[in-house]
Image (cartoon, rainbow, N blue to C red; front, top):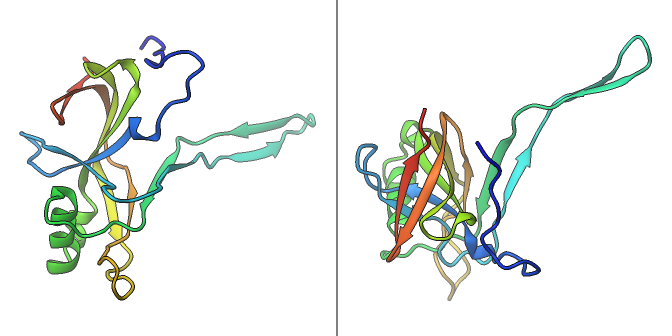
Length: 175
C-alpha cells in the first residue's frame, strides 16, 4: 500500500474529531457504523507494542516489537436513547449480560484526516473486538453513564471509508 498523506492544510494541527471509533449497530452483512463517544469529553487509543529487549552474545542490544494491542476508554459515556451505539451496548452489557457478544463486536476506526477527504479516508475494521463496561451510574443531579473500554481485535481489515450526510460506508482493500 502506498503511503497516505494527511488531507489537512500544512501547518494546521488535526482536530480530534477526525479520529472516529465506530460500532456496527447493523449486521455483518449490512453494517451501520455508529460513532462511539457521543458526549465523552476526552478519549484516545493507547497502543501497547509489547516486545522483548535482550543483549546477544556479542554485546549487541536487540529488540523485537509485537504488533500493538489497542485499548480505548470512553469515560463517561452518558446513556442517550438517540445514540444507537450506547443503546446496543447497554442491552448487551446490562440487560443481557452477554459476555460472548461483547467479546465479538464489530468495530471500525476511521482516520478522517488520512487519504482523500470524506470520499476515501483510511479505515480499519476489527471483526472480533471486545467491549467491557466498567460501571453504570453517576453523581446525583448528574447523568447516568456507562464507561466502557474497547479492545479492537479479531481480523484487521484495512480499507477506505466514505462519509456522506453522517452515513459512514466502509470499502475493504482488494485482496
